[in-house]
Image 1 (tube, helix red, strand yellow):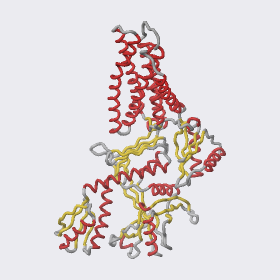
Image 2: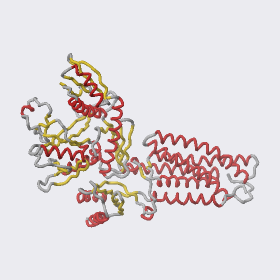
Image 3: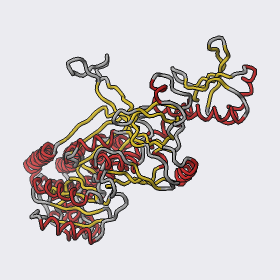
Image 4: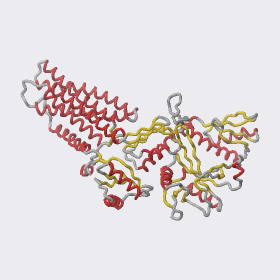
Length: 628
């Protein structure tokens, strides 16, 4: 028989359709305003905490629509955004020292579906609402820091080789300048530096009638430092986002110096911007108590020392040598000091930092050690009227500010080790933010937010509604056209097209892919492409009928002869979609993902499923004519 499916083909179709409809089902239930709660500073949320949170909310009259305990924390669902905000404020007040609380959207999927691993697909920033940052890494500061390190290393190398020098410093225009006391030792100095520091290029020059060594970093060294800074910044930003408690964030590299950060569902954008954009670290130095600070204030700062100021403006003279910095901090926690009642940050150091801290404090009992807070901020440059100033290319001009403040400079009363406390902070909020930044890891280089877009929840819902409308309008128009033009065959194609959309959504849900507006565009395009295969088949059947073939032979020939054309067209489109996915970024990838999945599902529904329906209706029958 020409048009008949064996039983195993129906089994295959059933094995595809049944799971597909099941995994697409969770997307029908929508989202509720919710709260995601995670443990802070290593605290784990257990069943006792879960019960305590629910009991607290119920005691305060805040109705919970649903609650789940997960490995990463707990999620609470509420009926209205107002209830969500009240619960957030209450939990932050009661558990702010142990939990991180973030506003989010929680799927309203029944527990029996989630228990069977059926989850809805994620919605992207443009559909869900949230904040988008485009951040640029200041690579000039990376080179500046590297040269500062090399200055210290070169001094050490020359001292070890008994080569006396007058000046070892960063040159004003970049690079390092070395001036020796005895010019005859230039060759020895070059040999020592080449041997100990291979990542440098050395050239001889003259300055004030004296021969000097001009040193700069190699191109490979600069590239390696830039790559490392970018990757470390991405890691640090991810850690900070984890501390903020954001669900499904995206931190992605763009080019050789930019980072894209998307935080879906975030509503407290001010705090997110403050935490992500700040480059904060700590440095510890000994106080210079051997020289008169009044002389330093008069402009005569002694060599090896530098003048700093406390937050209230009081001056203090510190020795230039950094004992250890934020890179040696492995944990930081904000708390209230039991004696003074003020906010403090408890610091835990790594093994190297602990050894340095133990040695330095042991050798300097009854002397002072200062903790310097360093932060680089960026602000818009404005004119006298407060309006932003733009450059020749139309970009807003920004000014970078380096803030260096001494937080505290206590007297060393005893030998310290791995742990110590920082006092002198202005508020509990500042202590928490500082602890978060130190705990998440300092940025390898300052980052500047050069683009910021905020998508509100209402706009996200509007995008969802418009995207859904576009899909439905396109689907309905195609269904009407197919039903009118191809009659019964058109109705069968419409059924396959509807199934194709369900399978596409099921695959996105199963993969836990993120659907964005470009992804919706890919779905709309899939609707047209999916029915295109049926149009080719039906037109081929019509042509066979016009050539005088029987209805059964025309159906068989239509599917057999159109298959190669359909396969070629879809494979070439799939290749283009894969290229878009590999070389595209962000929205382009979202479009390519839905298009690729749609091509695969449409091949199944348009060829195998519709032919099965046609065989079921017309197979094993004697036909005089076909309504097509």
